[in-house]
Image 1 (cartoon, rainbow, N blue to C red):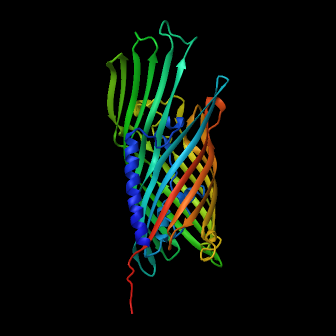
Image 2: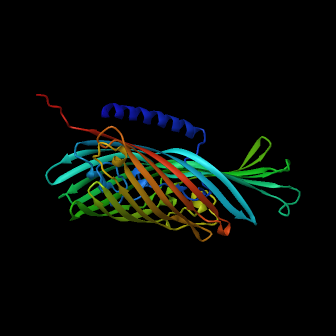
Image 3: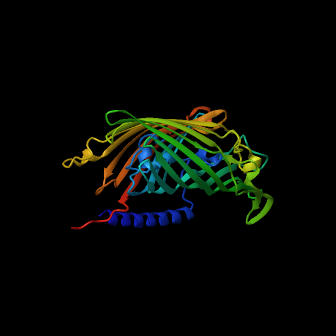
Length: 444
C-alpha cells in the first residue's frame, strides 16, 4: 500500500509542478505585499508544514517522523531504513489597511504556491555512527505588488493635467539545496548543507499623463539572481529523565555575494512610439549580497508523545547593498538594510500513537507563536510580524505517512507613519511520504 501511495504522490507532485509552472508564465504571484518592493522581496520561513504549524521552530528538533531541514544536523535522526519525501502547498489571504491623509484605504489579495519538495534517505550506519542525506528545493523570497496613485490638484504641473504613478513587481528567488548529517555516539549530530540561489526579480514604475501630447515615462529593472552559500548545524541530545530528552541546536548560514546581472531601463513613450532615455547592464557582484544567519534553539521532548521548543534567529543584511539604488537598479527611497531577528516557540502533542480504536488519538496536534523583525527598515521603522500557528497531522495508511494541515494567523506592519498593516491567514498542507529501504521479505 505504501508503494502505491508513493507512486500516487509522485504523480500528484508532477501534475502540481506543471500547473504551477504554467501559472507562473501567466504572471502569477508567489506572494503579494507592498513591502516586497524592497531588496529581494519577502523572505520565506524555512520548514515544512510540520515546522510551520509549530511557529517555525526546528533548530533543536530531532524527529524520525518528518523531514526537518531547518537544521542540516537533524536529518540523521531519520530511521536507518527509511526513505522520506515531503511536498507542500500554501494559500495566503491578506487584508491591507492604510491611513493616508485622513482616509482609510483597504484592499485584499489571495495567492497560492508550492513551497517545498524534499527527499531524505539514510547513507551509512555503524554501532557508533549514523548518517543521512537530503535534497530539495524551496522558495527563498518572493516579490509581488501592483499599486498606483493619482496626483490631482493642487499638484498639477503646468498644463499636464492629472498624473498617474504606477508600480509593479513580480518574481521569486529559489534555493536548491543538498545536505548531509552524521550522529556520533548517539548524542552529537553535525550537518552541512550546500545552497544554490537562483531566480529573477522584475520591478517597474510608470508616470502617465492624461494630456495625450505629453510623453509618458516608464522605468524598471530586472535582476537575475545567482548565488552559492553553505549552512552548518549542530545538535546535542541529552537524556534528562525517564524517556525525556533535552536537545540543544545551532545553525549558521554564511553570507554570500550574488552573481547574475541587473538591467535598468527608462523609456519615454508617446502613442506607439518609444524612445530610450537610458539603459544599462551590470554584474551583481558589485556589492550585492545575501545576509548571514545565526540560529539557536532548545527543546524538551518526552519520547514521541510531546515536545516543546524555542528558537532565536538573527540575520545581518546591513552590508547587503540592497538599499543602494545604483547597485540594484531599483528605487529604494525610505528603505534601509538592517538586522532581522526572529523569536519562535512551538508545542506538539500526540495523545496515543498506538491507539487502535480512536483515530483522533493517533493524530499529532501542534501550536506555536512567533515574532519576526524585518531585514530592512522603512522610514526608520522595522516592519514587524507577530502571529500564532495551529496544525494537525493526520496519519495515512501505516509507518510515518501523513497529511499535515496548518494555519498561520498574524499581522505585519502597522497603520502609523503612512505604513501598511497586513492581517493574514495562511493555510498550508504538507504531504509526508515514508517507505522502507533495504528490507527483504523472508518466507518459510
